[in-house]
Image (spheres, rainbow, N blue to C red):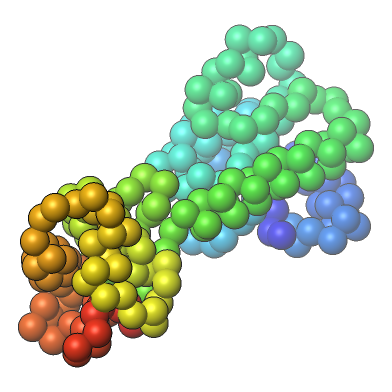
Length: 226
């Protein structure tokens, strides 16, 4: 876990760094808001601890700029204890708020809690994302991408590609797909499956005439090649 500590009080940064490194974290230091934004933009951090009152760029402004390109958890430090200041901090994108002077044990507890919460969110998001080559789908939001570009799929097209991607290599006959995706009581033509497969290839394959992912097993059915 990498943590960025930002404060113009170098002794405070040194103290926080010492305590966090004793907990096993890797710590990077910055001493003004501009430096914090640049480090957050160019490096990967799991958490940022940042003072509000700093030269060049305040912690609030730095927090707002970081939120333009990152969702990294941010704890703001400030000498002010007013509730309005805390509300402003949250509106600028902060995840937590600690008033100076603070107990280092409280800070470490807040760090652990925020990292744990962030990790749980990341795991949930990862479980919803299926990626294979140039194709990426989000089963929670029911969105799809080809080479990073959003692709609009109909409800049945999404159901079909989701089923295939969740079971790579498994061959489904047209009858199987018809019963799973359209339902056992569907009275339509079995060629409906072929039409939807063709449309999926047109939307998601780099070259629909020579598909790399949505494959045909001749005489059997269709499958997804991971």
